[in-house]
Image 1 (cartoon, rainbow, N blue to C red):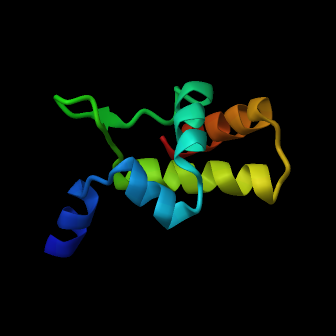
Image 2 (image 1 turned 90 degrees about the horizontal axis):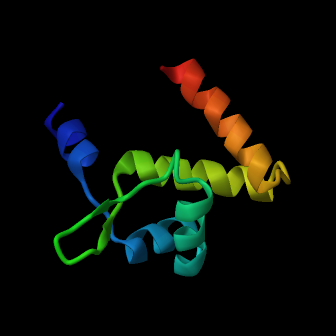
Length: 88
């Protein structure tokens, strides 16, 4: 249980998210703008991005939808919206 709490509170940098997902940093920044309803990493006092594990899951989901399902940005937004409504 303690490890779950630690993992849940873990914050990742944009470099770490890029390495874990294979998504370029420039693409992650673009996705923040394109999918701002779903992907909003926190910012430090020095304005650095801090991604949560939930943010990492969203990045992986967006990547899968684009690469495997061949969805457009609008298609990804619609499908992510349905997923979030279902999981609420």
